[in-house]
Amino acid sequence: MPPIVALESTVISHGLPYPQNIQLAQRLEAIIREEGVRPATIGIIEGRIIAGLGEAHIRLLATTRDIRKVSRRDLPIVVARKLNGATTVAATMWAAHRAGIQVFATGGIGGVHRGLGDLGTGSFDVSADLQELAQTPVTVVCAGVKAILDLPATLEYLETFGVTVIGYQTNEFPAFYSRESGLTVDVRCDTPEEVAAIIQAKRQLNLPGGLLVAVPIPEEAAIPKGEIEPIIALAIEEAEFHKLRSAAVTPFLLKKIAEMTGARSLEANLALLENNARVAAQIARVLG
Ligand code: PSU
Ligand code: MN
Image (tube, rainbow, N blue to C red; front, side, top):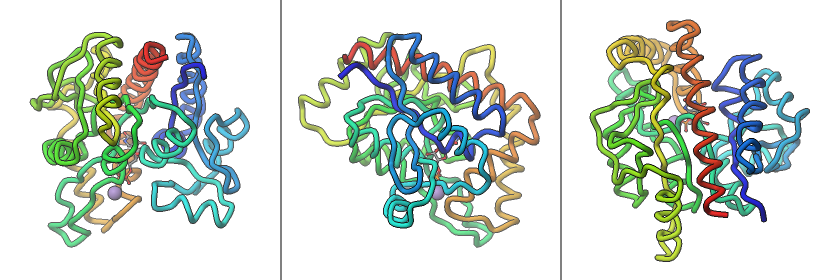
């Protein structure tokens, strides 16, 4: 099989506004093809889990209101009821592995949420993305986790479950909009070959689960931590005020941050997604 890179669809339906979402989906596929690799955007159409959505299906997910956000727990529901669904990192990893795909590019993975518990809105919110990384052998290329989350707790969780975290051309775990977090990665790799060697060693050792490759956002698109932090804090306060929980939390926070930073966070989000798609394609090519 030629090398393939998987792409998720929740970022299309819930992570970005229209029409940037559909333009981005097409752009990511083009970038992966430019590297000589096949893209496979993953989503669910009328209960069918598809690895390699066509243009019309991507358009459907990008333009329909209230597309269901599908994580692992939602898979049996959308399949049984023949619904349309956009897959999160967790569900995309699962579907990618089932389709024989080893590498997956996204923007940010879910993680351990900051203490939303203080105001009684639910004190325990850990994304299913982390458990998926613990059990499904797919390499996820991302720009870290959004600073809406508890980064140190997220890294601790990954360590507990044996997920290797690789910094791509960095010693620090990147924080999505910002290149720095003050937190370290398990290993730094500077080339796709170095990453591929670690993926192959993990497979040879029969270690279960995936790997996380964290790539800092390109310098010119980065938003300094001091600038984005107060905005994130406001967005979290608002989520607490509205007593949001479960799957609604992440899309709400992303939308609020986009509103408060104007085009800037959107530009940053697009830039890092494109960058990650390229890095993922280069890794997939080395893996063959
Ligand atoms: N982070 C982003 N953009 C996104 C997401 C995360 O910057 O669109 C999406 C991804 O699909 C991720 C999901 O898998 O949110 C995590 O949601 P939850 O925290 O409900 O597991
Ligand atoms: Mn959650």
